[in-house]
Image (cartoon, rainbow, N blue to C red):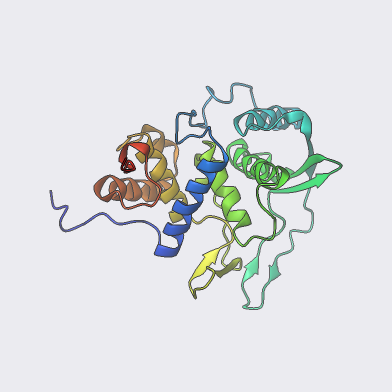
Length: 258
C-alpha cells in the first residue's frame, strides 16, 4: 500500500552503484567460494566466535586465528603485532579537513610472510576488531596473492568489498572507516568518492547478498546498527522490485542462445 508514493530506490549514487556491481562480479571470478553462493554468513555471535574474550593479547590472537579461518588465510603465515598509537595527532589536508590518526590496523609483506599491526585501542571492542582484522586479511588475499597492485585507485574500497564477499560484511558495515578528509574523485568524473566503502555502499553490497540468497527480509539484518540496517532494507527493496544490477544471481541471468 502507498508504494507508488514511495517507490524503491538504490541507496547509492550511480558511480558507487556501478562500482559495487562491477567489483562483486570481479570477486566472483577471483574467488569461487563466497557468501553469495552458499558460504556461511559470519555473525557476531558465540556460534561463530565461541572462545571467551577478555581483551588480553592471548584472546586477541585466538580471535584473529578465527577470522583467518573465515577469510581462508593460514594463520601460521601471518605475524600479528599489537601496537599503541600514543600521538593521537590529527593531520589536516589542503582543504582544512581533518585526517584521523593511524588506522586500527595496517598490512605489510615481509620475507614472504604477512605482517599485520593492530592498534591496542581496538582491543576493548572485539566486534569492531573483527572488522579491522578481516579488512587487513583481505589485503593478504588481494595484494599478498598478487591479485591486484597497491597503486590501483580502489585498493581500499575493494578490500572492504572483499570482506563482504567472504561473509564478514556486517562487522565493517557497523563501523565503516570514513572521514571527510579522505575523499577523492571517481575516475573520469567530478563525483567524490570515499577512500573506504561508505554506509550506502555497504548497504548496496549487503542488499545483493540478501538478493542472491533469496531473502527479502534477511534475519541477519538485526545484527546491523540502525543506519546500516536502513541502507540494507532500502537496497533489498529496490533489488527485489527492479532487479536493476549488473551483478545478478544465476537464476536471473539470461541463458545464451544455442
